[in-house]
Length: 325
Image (cartoon, rainbow, N blue to C red; front, top):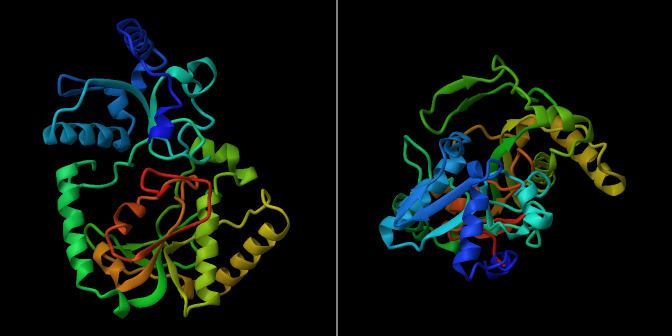
């Protein structure tokens, strides 16, 4: 935290603070600006309409205010998975003075931005996440459940569950019926339409630059097929990428071998059952993989720290607020 805050020039006078506030109110920044003034949180409607991550940040700040007074603060916020490493001008050049918070840094700790936790915690059945009181209640319940499972009696394998998808528009390797967490409703994925690609995904499809997370998930699934005595990393949806043209040499050969292995035995790499967070504590080791959208943060990590298991992080430059130093 100190290291990332030190990347931005401190405001020590009224004039400097006034200049920062004026800058944040300019048209190119105000819809990324957040203000806490007198215990109230302020942001534009457009900021809130940009998605649940922005809404979750405001919920977090509001619940933090309830726990105790917060000082008056003003900053810009980027909710994208990359941390703005190549997308936003106010993290670069002469604009480095604008304090900016991010929920992940795809380029590692040296990338500019003050890390905040992603807001996918403390969510109820309705509404966005970010509620600190609800999150405390949820983690307390998870730790109590984990405490009932002695580490020595846990399954000595590396556990992971999640989606293995692609940005190429490829269908699933196996048609399956999957119970959703919320309602346990069965969904016939053979009839489900393919996910519509975003414009950025269409532009990058040929370079496969969007697939860092999906490639990691493919490799993890292939480890399960090679060493089922050590790994239990399976996909509840299996549609891995197969365009590896942006990788060369041994890395590309490894991915091609992994795809061949998984595609030859897809059902062995799948588990469509819903696994509750407390059941992760049945295993001695739990794995966190990069997110499927751009190989950045994954919501999975938020609850892993409370399972009492050893948390394994995939070797990638990406860092989050939840990562150890």
